[in-house]
Length: 498
Image 1 (cartoon, rainbow, N blue to C red):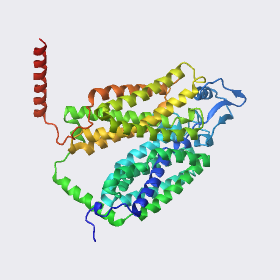
Image 2 (image 1 turned 45 degrees about the vertical axis):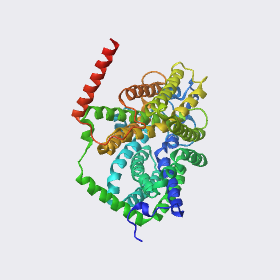
Image 3 (image 1 turned 90 degrees about the vertical axis):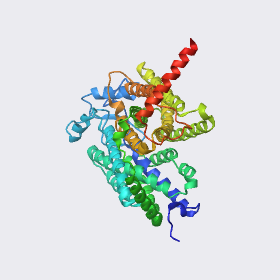
Image 4 (image 1 turned 135 degrees about the vertical axis):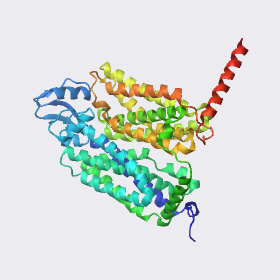
């Protein structure tokens, strides 16, 4: 029998196991490339050079002394994982200033080319996210998902043969485009291949958090950035094979549904990004939600790509991060479900961001007062806890966006806010490259960003939990009536007090 819509064919059968397996390999492919530089660009410790041992109590102080040691010939490096920084001796902010890439990095105000490779990748993710949605609507999600998987395999493999840091940076950019495409199209493709009645729990069976632990295991086994890239590509090959097994008939029905929906939307009223800035209330909500997403992304990726300064094993830190994100996400979900109105979106946002802010200010205090040796375990614990908490904030912001904006501009608002989040991905990894003249300045920046987020979010964003979804755009006439009604209530209240 010919199926007319996707849900007509979906049942809990062996095909769903194929889809779930594909989802796991897809998520690992995305994660292993998005956070690859967590290991691939990890900075080694530089305790000295030649016969000189630096009088430093932290990796930041080691770098400061190394950068000033101009006649250094053979730096002493200590590391767990052989990253590109180790192989190409891209240490701290010091290198030969004779590359075209230096002109590019200066535009961003940094000298550390290894850290800039992460920024290059994040710029690629923004571009990939922007083009993938339109391509999938034109050619189908399965074809575009397969295309990006194959390109990912190609660029990641070629990248593992890079002979200079400049070549590595360029390939990270193209890998980022593939990551952006997969995060936009691949995840939707998986959801469309699951039964509607079971999509929620089946989508949460496999998530990013546990794959942090698996990726840390891969890094531990390989111990070197080239082999890590190639070993991760084995998972990409499996993802390509499983994607090819998915049902073409379902893809055809989904594509027809998209075309039908496009025709329906063509007859409806057109909305664009401009409509986010026509009405004052929506404009403020758009700006505040966008700033909040930028802040969360900035803090998340600023911490993630600075794990090399933490005490303890970088492998264990990565694994614990994944576990904490999973546990914190589960705790927040339980509190949200059983807390009712007492645990609303705003209160949960206030608690989680305030906690991260306290962690950042705490670490800054330790660095600023030169107590790193005495409290290095505290720095590690606070960093891991802060990063573990950031995971639930992304989901909170996505829910608030869906619940706060009217139907006609909901997707546009979501796209706008996610683009701002991508900007946080771009600039966050460079936060510890900026020198403000005192120790721990990066953590102070992150703490201030969290503080500003808490304040403006609490002031301007309404509580959306258990509220009806807004349908139509607010009208100025209705707004005037609401203002007059509010004024009348205030007058009555004042008269009652008198």
